[in-house]
Length: 129
Image 1 (spheres, helix red, strand yellow):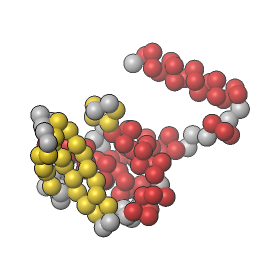
Image 2 (image 1 turned 120 degrees about the vertical axis):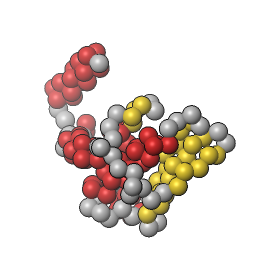
Image 3 (image 1 turned 180 degrees about the horizontal axis):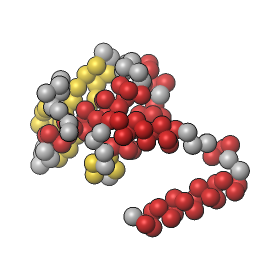
Image 4 (image 1 turned 90 degrees about the vertical axis):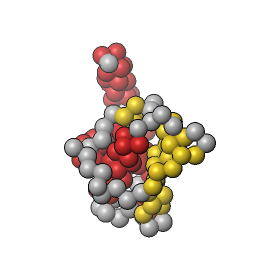
């Protein structure tokens, strides 16, 4: 269960959009939804993203550390939302999944057989959804 008691941020309505944001040292984190979106859901996404990054960066959530780990940020966002649909709101699960995906070998270092096997797996999972 997500607790919103520790949410230190702001909620704003801007040009028909609901904006939830928080700052930390030299960074600002924003989650934006339509004016019809539930602010609590947007806060849950923001808290999940921030807490996931905090764990991944070992509580060192600042500009330089984030720039050095931009791939992890992108993977975390990909695990949390997809096309505006919230997939995960538990930071522990997000960090676990990012760690699993981070262990993947880059395409440039894979053999042709490994690339074909990876493509087969992706097609199989996309068809099973």
